[in-house]
Amino acid sequence: MLPCCAVRTCHVLVLVLCLSAAEDFDWTKNDRGSFYYGTFPAGFSWGAGSSAYQTEGAWDQDGKGLSIWDVFSHRKGKILQNDTGDSSCQGYYKIKEDISLMKELKLDHYRFSISWPRIMPTGIKSDHVNEKGIKYYDELIDNLLENKITPIATLYHWDLPQVLQEKYGGWQNISMVNYFNEFANLCFERFGNRVKYWITLNNPWSVAVEGYETGEHAPGLKLRGTGAYRAAHHMIKAHAKVWHTYDTKWRGQQKGLVGISLSGDWGEPVDISNQKDIEAAERYVQFYIGWFATPIFHGDYPQVMKDFIGRKSAQQGLGTSRLPTFSSQEKSYVKGTCDFLGIGHFTTRYITQKNYQSGHGSSSYFTDRDLAELVDPRWPDPGSEWLYSVPWGFRRLLNFVKAQYRNPMIYVTENGVSEKITCTELCDDWRIQYYKDYTNEMLKAIKDGVNVRGYTAWSLLDKFEWDEGYSERFGLYYVDFRNKNKPRYPKASVQYYKRIISSNGFPNQREVENWKRKATETCSSSNQLLAAGKFTLKHPL
Ligand code: NOJ
Image 1 (tube, protein in one colour):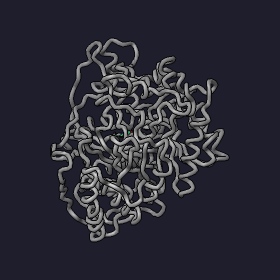
Image 2 (tube, helix red, strand yellow; image 1 turned 180 degrees about the horizontal axis):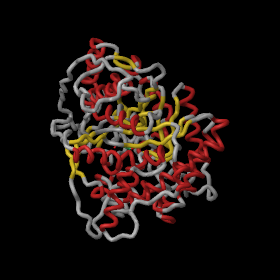
Image 3 (cartoon, rainbow, N blue to C red; image 1 turned 30 degrees about the horizontal axis):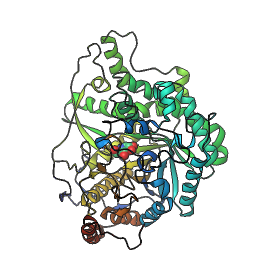
Image 4 (cartoon, rainbow, N blue to C red; image 1 turned 180 degrees about the vertical axis):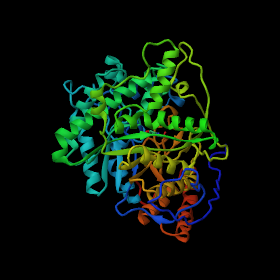
């Protein structure tokens, strides 16, 4: 891996592609190196995102209850350097400042999440509703709207009330379906006159696999081979119930949309002429995004998951599959519960077939898939160790979604790249490159006919990056976490993203090349000042 902040040059072949929306995407002929000059459809929505636990801080203020992340991060050894989200970016106290950052970017929308225990401290409505918590989100939403920024609200970005974990085992327990529905219903009641885009769950894959299978995330359970499937099953049902609640009780008057945000890497066969690799790569994607999207769009789990997990469960001598089943009533209840699909996407893997023997007790989500993941060492990886920049994978994933789920309305809810903590670099040219190339692949996907309506850069600010603490920075804005006021400083990518937004795409080669030059002009002096602790903004935030 290159050292942090090293200048990365990615030699992009500048070709103008002639793409036709009428033709089907051809997986074998997709030119990976070309750049497409053109603009996005009128009305395309540009945004940036955050989540409650990662940015708000104020973990024990104004009547907020504990979430599983408060408890998990306070346990020694769970988070890198024992960091916590206790104060994080202090976003709870900085609504106006953060909105001024969004205005600087000229964002059309802002994606944030509502902390369940902030407005229902135990997670249970009949126990207590915390009006101070409601007031915070009221203010945030009102300020966004006053500034013509559309709020996109996520109901669950991983911060389950701790009481629900302790009393019931969290997402292992079917009772979460009703508790989550009550919480969602309260949000629709109190905020739905102003919020028109709702995301039920953020990245349930991570909750299931990292929360209940590997234990790297809260609640930290290691229920290998069963925990993730159970958690996912209950989350899918919870999502469906919330969609139905909105559909029957609120849609008529509020006229909003309810979707889910699914994360997924793209999986590319190592050897595109090898049928086993092709099938393994398809399995990788089906076990990722298909695990959730297939029930929601088609009513049941992907056939390949049912086959593989079922066969392996039988080989272990189990009477039933470790993958739970939906009754026929449940299938029709779950099917079609998505007004738009949120896609979170960061990276790609090469995939090859690899058999795992299923012995007693050795089962896991990972071995169920019978595959191995590989990366190309030439792929840039500036920050998180899992995050390699592979822009062409994004176009492929978007085309996969179009083909598999009958071209749903898509909002990209997360896409971005990190850098290491030691990097106090405001001249983030690798992030500029990442955003440029990934949004360009998204543009090509739209030309392929994929129905993408909006894009959310992840993330607005540097923030608490879960088990990695503050060691990985995803922000367009740098946050100085050593200073208790948590000041924000624009990275060069702010200037660049702003230009993509104001041009609604990439008008022509000359202009686009100028953007980078202009974006990096100011950052080197700001950098030196920041390093020397003397950075002051013209208009302090
Ligand atoms: C997906 C998660 O939803 C988000 O919270 C996190 O910051 C990004 N992945 C990057 O790891």
